[in-house]
Image (cartoon, rainbow, N blue to C red; front, top):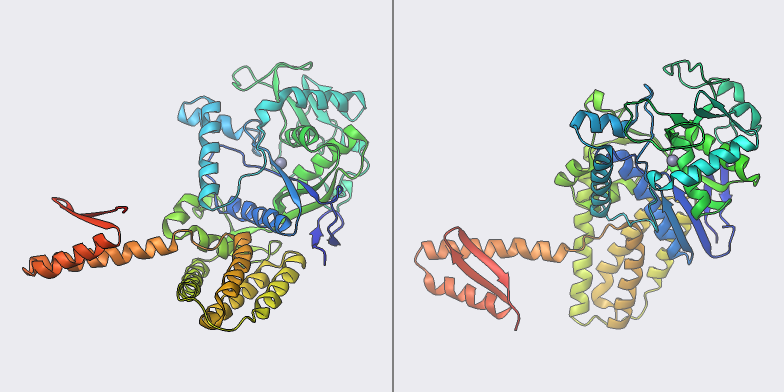
Length: 472
Ligand SMILES: [Zn+2]
């Protein structure tokens, strides 16, 4: 079977066939680095991580580009978010951009979201941006107005094909101020002439200025992915105007259609029914969530809702995910025990492959991750309960098969056994200290000796008993 996935461009589920056989080229809109990453980032990037891992599992090679917006992302009020943040902290915008890029990477690493093949930054591609803007002017798709450059949407007949709207319906939001430099309010900025006080600005044929938000994506994508590629991803809120503008820029520049074969968007995220926003006090930062929940539980929680469905944040569901991770760890420990014990006599593990096939079917059915996870948990549970009866070779084979599936979701805690050991160790240390307090030094010493025999040395210090692993 083949992966079938919903394509926003055709508004339907399509069979996935990359342009080049066996190789997938993908671009996902990266972060605007001016603040700590939030749950919305976690949702989008964890989904695309699952997609990449599943494509690789299916035998594809994946080249994955994520841009970093470190300049020029305008808020509705026309301010650059990074410069605004830098101003409020009295720092250089580049220092802010660097700091928050590192924070973004740290959060993604903690969530076990694999890094893309490359993460080009907007500020590193100003010559490419200027070149693309020049091409658009030369081809008649863009015009210069008072040092700024705008894309003329009336010249691009397909404008609206991604959001499935007629051009008349695509008026920008009511909050946008009327800009007298534009011929039409729907036109969008490719290059913006900088105010004197603006810090991040570059020379261009039109003015000393900085790029518009949409142009960086296509300048970067055309450079590294070419004039046509397979997947462009992002949150559903980016469909208009951002991705609509990208299609217009790229197809007007190259004349090649379609710019992207599959447009894949993750659904809305709400917090108790409301949009997540700092002003509403319901803003969920990934680092805060990681204080309360294991990364694996967060990943499980996020993958338990279909990527296109709206996700309403619910802590109860995260608690449930934590419990499911505990069950998962217990099942893995049971399988590991059976492996240690040498297994049993049955060589029939056909149920593993039957369920694996069901898992793959669910994933290929428009990335039905909730169903795939259900199948995975059933598989693991079955394997754990049957493990002592299965021959060692088959048991190891079965475990490897389940690991391939869980790796797609990154839901098995890496240090589960170590964390458990640490907890048991602290109980032993506590009991030993109680024994010493009671004067039972013989039994206390026995505990210390036995731990030493398995490679754990205890040391009594003024601040309590410490332990370390000793070899040999
Ligand atoms: Zn983007």
